[in-house]
Every structure is written in structure tokens, then in C-alpha cells.
Length: 109
Image 1 (tube, one colour):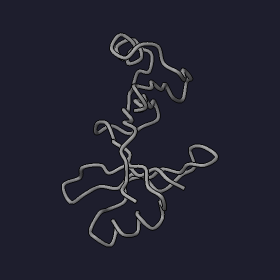
Image 2: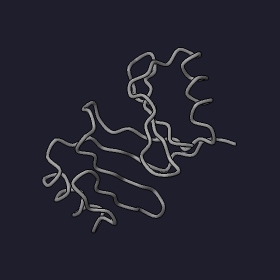
Image 3: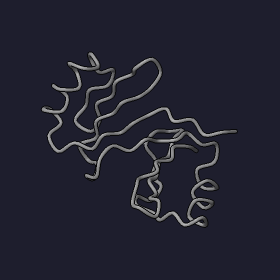
Image 4: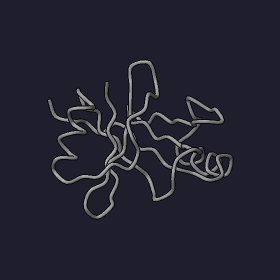
């Protein structure tokens, strides 16, 4: 199975200010909480994350086996930026980085 990129998470320092801008562009969010604001654009998730680290947006690839994919990427030379963590009952995420420091987001079980 090939990974599918279905979400883009944007770290923000001022959630209200970011929400005002992105809501003009993307419409009303489907989730609007102090920890996460999410927009669904034809099945693609754009999320504002006030707890995220800077460095720009992270595209997340949906993978069948997060641990196996993570280990394979680490063996190939990626480095870990954010360790795996549970974000929903059926989903965990982590962020790795390539040799140039570009983020690689993974979302899976």
C-alpha cells in the first residue's frame, strides 16, 4: 500500500489570529477548539495547531504501520523530530526529518 498525504498541520503561535485568516480562505472550521482547529477541504484536512513547534507546516502521510514505516525511515537516515504519540483512539502521529531538516509527518496505527 502506498502512503497517502491527507493532511497538513500548521503550527501557529496565535490561534485566534490564524483562525481569522484561514477561515476567510477555507470557510468555517469543522473542529474549533483551543487545542486544534480543523478544516476539511474536499477530504483533505488543514489543521491549525497552537501546540506545534515552529518551522512551518507538516504534511502527514497516512501509513498502514506507523512503527514499521518510522523504523524504515530512521534506518534510511531520517532523524526523529517528534516521537510517536496518540492523537485519536485509532491514530498516532510522529514527525521525522530528512537530512536537510525537512519534516516528514506520519499518521497511522
